[in-house]
Image (cartoon, rainbow, N blue to C red; front, side, top):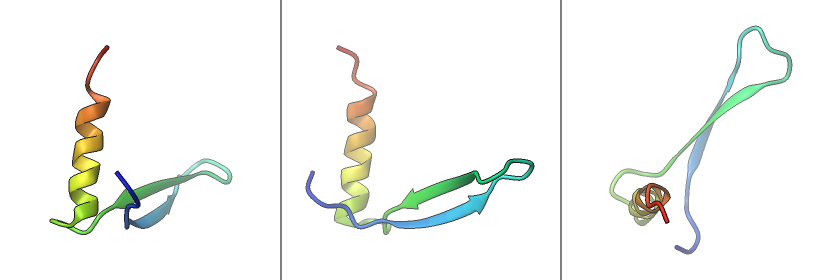
Length: 47
């Protein structure tokens, strides 16, 4: 796959101490976006 270029956003989770939801995303139509799609497909393959 190589390196991925991703941006992220962190959101505080209400009602919890010191927990955050982290969202990572690649630029649409980028090489990183295509690599993430492929990783998603690979994660659904059952051996």
